[in-house]
Length: 216
Image (cartoon, rainbow, N blue to C red; front, top):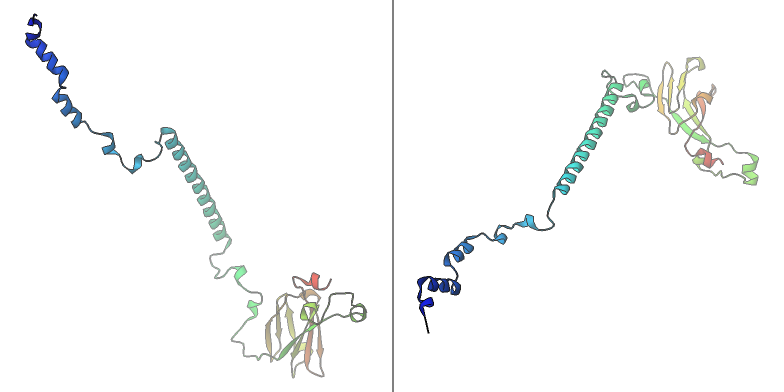
């Protein structure tokens, strides 16, 4: 048998390469970085593509534009409110209660005695037939009667000014600024001075919010 073909050095080297892999290749494989060594929490979940980034940018831009519009509207409203208020005014008109212009703590005149009574207009249908919802409470009273004692006073010396929520009375000796407990119809009130008792009686129709229910 002829062994010349197997004795050559090239044949032996080829056989060695087949039986054992190249060590250099193994070292190079070990030196290659592994994918999992570079992973971080940001890799969890679906990958972000360019479309999602563009959509997020568009949403942010829309939100910023709406916020800018709201801010501009708020600035315009604030500016308009500031213009409506006179800079020289200490309080606005809404902050000043009705009748404040009559308050004068330095006035030496005494405050007279007064009494507030609520009157009810009672008819035959209320007393005997009971056809209405009226009862004896003040909620079912239509008029407010104010009795003011004015001793040593003449009717010609009385100055009376009645508003919907405030009553102002002045005489040479007395002064009364009265905030009314309920709004009244100041244009349809009546005043009568009882000279024998030195009492001024003022009858004012009330204008409350739910009177249309109580008087139905």
